[in-house]
Image (tube, rainbow, N blue to C red; front, top):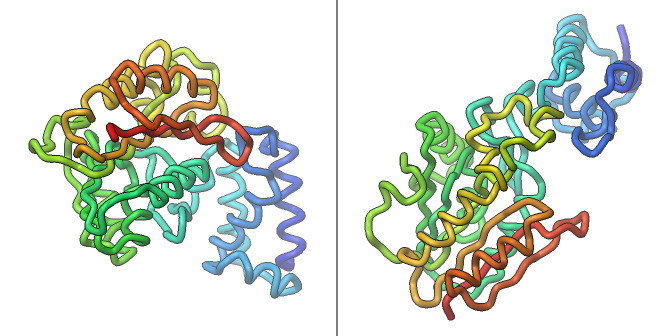
Length: 285
């Protein structure tokens, strides 16, 4: 049997030898090893640092080996362990939706800084796991938040995540963008829509190979859904409402132009932690 420390060394070597390393598309082999081992033991990451000399039993080692084998084959860590931590939440993840990324937490941070009513009405378009809607709800207990997705499996998943995080007050419903949203005014509309070009080579690399293309691609330039959202949001935003959108790191200028073409004001683009343009927002103020 191996100790926790020895198991981590073994796994890191396995993943690096099979090409799963820190190449900008995957998390590092070291981080992956820790997350997979913690899940195998049903413990938090801190447990690994606290008990490095603890021996794994046979079942734990077998589970860990199976997890490492799946990761070596390219399967996303979130799919292997069944969840992804986002903001302060633990969200169930399935192959039916996009895996929440750290970059999207920036969208949540920006939304929380905006000047909005105490009981703001909020709409999350393409909610997926419910990550954005639930993160906002966890911080703003008086906000009235609705998340929509055109995939029924995503709606089911987001409702599960709401329940597991004690945030049942967030409403989730089936809607292709605004198709099932009744005529009403929102103080804030947020979205992390598909924004990758249909022929982008990135789609054949890393974790995205295992995620639904409908949650990733949007036309030849990746901007098809963003154009639709920016244009249609005008009808659903209150006079002082804000639209906040995540986009690709090379799309900042193009998305800003789309906002301008639709007569938004106070347009701003924020960089992510890598210094790359990631979130654009604007209002009619």
